[in-house]
Length: 529
Image 1: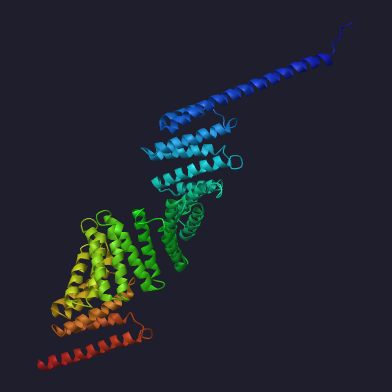
Image 2 (image 1 turned 180 degrees about the vertical axis):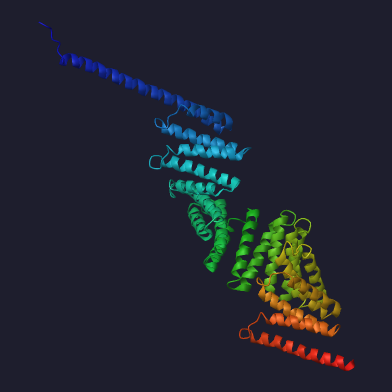
């Protein structure tokens, strides 16, 4: 009889099952122990690498991190992996301070992105915020190097992610720092697209940054952010809510000056005073003109206390030019002679910096400003001398402004030069100066800019007609009368009688008078013949 083997023996199964369970538990324990030993080994190596990094051994630390990370699993030890990847990014950022900046910055960016695969906001909000802040700064550095809009957009994305991880109440300074960085990035983005929208976003971010920066606890950051916010509001005023944004900008600069003083931070003080002067100047165009122009002048003069010709020649030249313009504008409202004198002095100071050899375009601009000031000053005193000085300055500008390269500036300068010669012809060398005025007007008229400057063309044709008419009493009567008639008719073609009845009638009267004079001249010539 065959011996049957029992397929299921409860006692035996219990023994086997118990043994198997023991084996499994032992394996789990061994695996856990091995994992702990591995993590412990990672930890000691990472700590050593961290110490190298802290002590300035960037390349040694980087090599250590790279050796370690190849054996670290992001799934099994995400915290260790994220820490190493973040620090590798830091190493590359530091190496980017030397040569091959772009290469190292891109490697840093890649490392930070790797770290973010394990540092999620829901699990590791602090690490998530820290790495995103590092990533944003790296992308911003790349943008400054490459000018790439994509790098800038990546920076904005990282900063926006970073700011979600920091609470204003828990870490106000870091919150303010990230918002400040975000504001700068939006400001830069406004140069690429959606100018007013991105400037508005920049304003909002700067405003948020100030919630984490007080004048008492963080005076430097407080001053920097108020200065930046003021400048952004000034730019935004060109696109929307002009007076409101200009007023807010002025308030920001005034607030910045509470911590940026002449004694403690002279260079920052000068920067903010210059910005404040620009805003006051723009405000003078919308309200209280004289009051804001006086404030403009005070602000520029305060800035010049620091930005001297010796220490800051470029800034000094710009400030003196702006100061001269402010005095010139104020001269239209009060103390014409005194303010024009001050304008001339300021513009001459500008010419100490803007020379023909070093900066010809700035030189020409400054000469035009000097010339215009002298031309206006001639109405108050020493007319002949000041007109001659104006003419000299206009001619200096024309050394730079030539038809081929600067047609608009050439046209305007020849027109102004013609007006100066016209005024001088009433005082001395009448025929010579009339002819010079005519030549200047004709040179301007030869420029194909009539559609761009119709009003100036009409005015110039009228003045040309006057010069030719006056010259007809000295030489070539019929020829100059015909030229005058032609010029007046040209000026008349720009006018609509119903819109400019007085001017239209004046020119029409001159044309009729010339027709009679020509008829009389021709009749007299025939009779004498």
